[in-house]
Image (tube, rainbow, N blue to C red; front, side, top):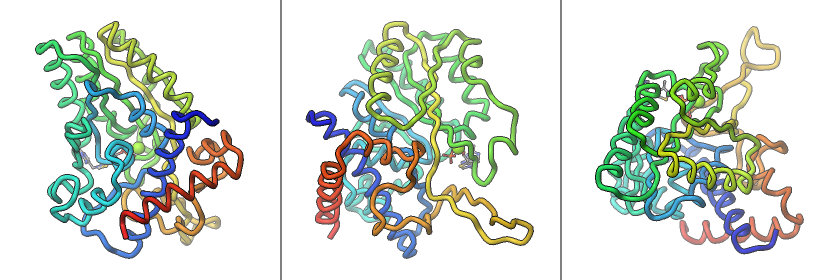
Length: 308
Ligand SMILES: Cc1ncc(C[n+]2csc(CCOP(=O)(O)OP(=O)(O)O)c2C)c(N)n1
Ligand SMILES: [Mg+2]
């Protein structure tokens, strides 16, 4: 791993990770008046989407968007200021976290309302067709949000109108405090997509280098075949913990949804979990220990310099 693109990818993943850990430190300190949905463990897909987007592509986000905003805007300071609701923030302190868009970085719309952004993405894709403008619409959503009818309606609309789009479904198996197994039957998104002759692909393993290769092909396929592509991304939101509770000998598992992750500390470095559930752990396997530490230290130093 020595070429410049690989290093750039590594720096971006580490920047997204450290930025979130720094935000988490301030969150634990009660510094924010708004809820923020951390996306620790979601860095691989965000860095990969940033890498495959060109100036014609647009991104439409959902409530858990911190990683995509960090991946694109590359400014922790302005993102922090937005979360403090300051006028120096990315959106002049007017959007906060759950609705944070950034037109300068082609993040054209973000919604806190589940499923709402899918309809806006359809409109944007139709607009591109009517105007004859280039590029693909990339829209993100979650395993909970696809329970909304809007998911089906927009897949159908995009397909019926021959509109290219990548629909990224971040499947962390949780919707608020409810695990997928507690709340519904399995949705076979592959078959669901097949039913309208849309393409489906699953990404798992948190390897950005592999994700980028596949996403470039899927973007081409969407554009050439004028079709939506459902991309299900298997991931784990890191930072959950076990709460002491009567009746739970090993503690009760807490998926914290929004709010700070009390078990994660900046002093412990960028890796949160020594497994493929952690994109930073996966990234680390590509580098010699010394090189990884060098990149990681540099990323953290530059971040800290700019927020001092
Ligand atoms: C229309 C609508 N219904 C309910 C909510 C409340 N709500 C906010 S986040 C959330 C869970 C979403 O789960 P998922 O889509 O899997 O995203 P995750 O938080 O797991 O990333 C719910 C139910 C909402 N924002 N909008
Ligand atoms: Mg979820």
